[in-house]
Length: 63
Image (cartoon, rainbow, N blue to C red; front, side, top):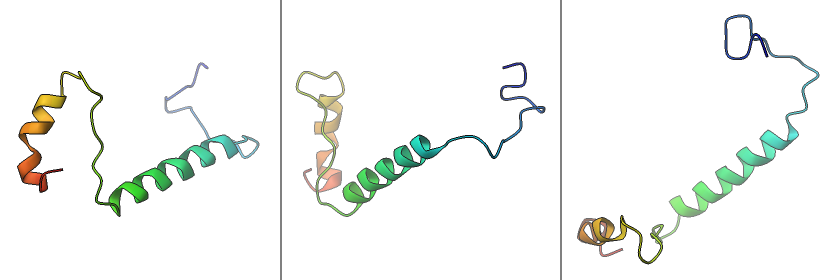
């Protein structure tokens, strides 16, 4: 860990990055699904941000 995120840090071809690739695929799927839907993410009931979201609903077409 002496070179972690420093100039001496280097990629190694023996790393197993399959888990990271699965994470990226999942995030892509979620992002694409959201981007092509008419649904907007919502805050949980009681969230401190829910009121702010409700105020800006008109800008988003009521969503």
